[in-house]
Image (cartoon, rainbow, N blue to C red):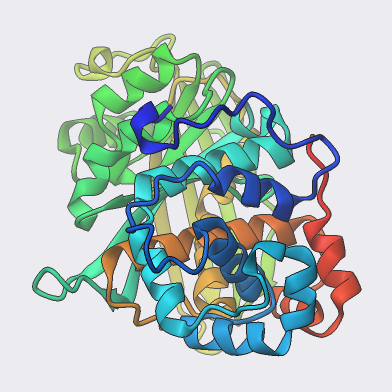
Length: 406
């Protein structure tokens, strides 16, 4: 995936044995990171410091100072499981320098391989993959005018596992970074969803040519498509043409979600799927393998004020699906915001003030790696609970890290 010069020329044929736990495999992979430091004066191998960072974040420490302080208290445990430290504990500055030194694209590739190893080859293929960008608001680029750090990630929605991530200079550059991100994944059989920013004809074609399907939101950035889709759904619900209640009919599938109560409001979704088999749209030919148009209509009542709001959302997809499936896909994609909320609240990502851009991106990928590890351990427990348990209980910590290759 990455050019060979990014890694050491040491042979990788032997590899780690299948019995190695997740931390051991990380140490093995990190041996092949290109180390640009001068040999004289080097006290720690990159992989050893990286292991301290990963376990430190796992145990609830969200910045370099906290990681170093935690490592000092857990010296005996670290010497047993990361013997390359040789009795020493990396300082806050060493941790930050290490994060700044590792190239973001190389570390992203390491994370991709690690995910494939421990969540199985199928973790990077099939299923529903959501692509979404995130801004680390408090982390700023030292070498620019102080703009925030951005990244784009591919997330497997069923388990909320980050499959791959890449850094971008600005939010606008997420469009140009998305093709490279998807090229790192096996898309055969997968359904890829994205917000309106990713609704680009070239990206849709790339997904289909790779053997996948797209499910992309349509907003004002595609004005002609938005107008034509709106006309299709207005015609579908024209009371004079169709006086009967809203229901399935040829070319139209409808699903009424259950009314839900929560967060001080009532909410219901009505999802409509219009097959393209008999639809005539001028711009339809621009979208590779376009199979259906989707409307998700969200109706909300604020229980405190009794205010009623309606919010329509439009999607295009290359996969034939019923309205219930379309509703589930849209909800799963929007659910990625919950994942971002976990990173911000449970890992303090939005509050992180790491100034170096490389360090900020790499620390963000460590958080995602840790979240991947925690996602399948006691899923009913909260992330803060599991991180505290990792910090206080070495046996629980080993249980999390003792994930076997698939």
